[in-house]
View 1: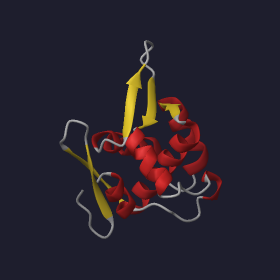
View 2 (view 1 turned 90 degrees about the vertical axis):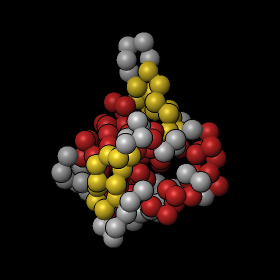
View 3 (view 1 turned 60 degrees about the horizontal axis):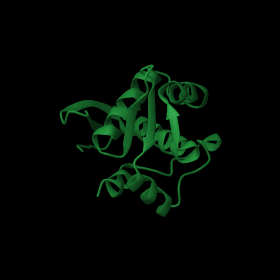
Length: 130
């Protein structure tokens, strides 16, 4: 993962380099996805997108849903989440067991209703991918 002081380079599931994203936005979206999956175990892509609109729209003004989809792809590429498809092509997203175990060992994350400070950062992501 290429990082500078302000940006992160994401990965694509096919192993190629993805887009770059502002570090603060990435960490906020990462926190949201992990907390949602720790709370509910499995979510549909629609539930994830709708939840992000409800909770994060005032925090990320520009293209929130596109950014969330980029983070989702990055987490798939890093082997932290799994996306399964139902017969109706609905995406079901869940944490990999190894990632869930590591997140629980790290103490989970803060309550989504209190998104004033971030408890996860790029350092935490590196720990999860070890």
